[in-house]
Length: 332
Image 1 (cartoon, rainbow, N blue to C red):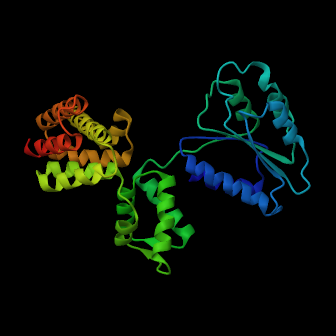
Image 2 (cartoon, rainbow, N blue to C red):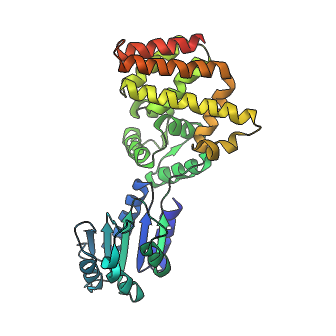
């Protein structure tokens, strides 16, 4: 979200002549691109000053020619997608860029988009020196997600109570693109009503399989086989049996990791770095790990292995074997 604010500020004060945007949050990048395009469309509604090129099908020489072309209106935006310039073997093919970076067209904003970068490559270093590099990352901490959600709700003219915001994020997951689409659905459903309620979320938003697995394990910890099997049936409607098993194995392994962390004197704040998980996920796993002891989790991981072997060797119908496994979990 802070990247979006930087771009909005740059639009007011003066855009860099050379931009590189990259990162794992593709939705935020798409949102930022649209904001940038809209700033040019205000002066030229026809969009004649905006060009979108693919680096896979357009040579650097041609891209530089486009960047040097003068726009009839105020300013030109050239967006270069799918760039392969961080791969090995580029050689002298990128030299036109390096020459351009020394004296870029003052009337053009040249924007490169990439999913990932290699900071050791010459191309990255050249842009970092001549322009501005922005990395788009999704929120990580719970409070960051709350800030992101507040911003999205404000933009849509809607509100949620604090408990509903926490529920929505837990129910719908933590992918900004998916959450944005679900918010659009909730806005339409709520109509003129300003406040979005928990009932609206349950009615309109599908629960993520990961969230359902968390609830399944909560039921296992409470020894409630009825609820656990209901949650299993729910997640099996969303995902293939082997995908569900993979999710369960991962959660059990993370819970074992939490136990090991606690035994070594660590705390929940250490978990994201050590286990490679997000802070919000660490909070939930930490609470669950208190309810399940080491022996139970060891038995659970063995049951997962036996179930996987059973599914792959045809010892029974996959869903039935998973039901049997979950029932055994509750009896541990």
